[in-house]
Length: 239
Image 1 (cartoon, rainbow, N blue to C red):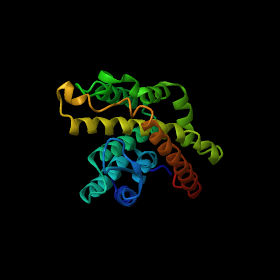
Image 2: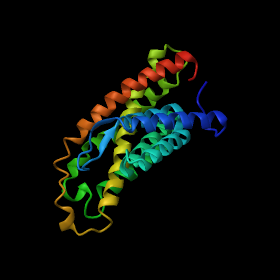
Image 3: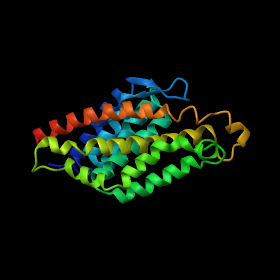
């Protein structure tokens, strides 16, 4: 039985349950956010794309937004992380529902908006910063994605075969969330049209080879958890 997106009693229960898990996991830190003193990447960040896969884009966004808002209120979360989490859940949800066109258009929009953010975007000082996001876009538009995503919902073949698409969806969703979070960061800290001389002291070059390490750790962790959850839920008949 596939989890649907109708807002009935079951859906509200799922939203509340996953939101509660999201709140709890937002207090478990993994490592500091580079460039944001006192802020950390939490376990919630690796759960967001999985919530989108298992609940779909609508319920996934609702669960992450509710859990993130509660965590934000209690100070264990940031507005940047909230934006990244919601975006990750949305991306994985629409990819799992095989709405790749929506994801491609929104991914490119986020990439351009962030890269060419007036004065401060990396395109103005160090375009190489977005190299991993370009890789994500290539994977997103490649034939590999639909071939592997189809396996997640496969019920007639062995369960292990349904896990092949999870790493791909998680990879793209984490990068999608990073774009949304980065755009939120520059919007909050550098309002539009900040003079270039004020934007230059921040170096995108110093982060270009560091943030991919963060994303890699998140990707591996989310993939391991996602494969385990997918296998368990299919065996129990929930998917």
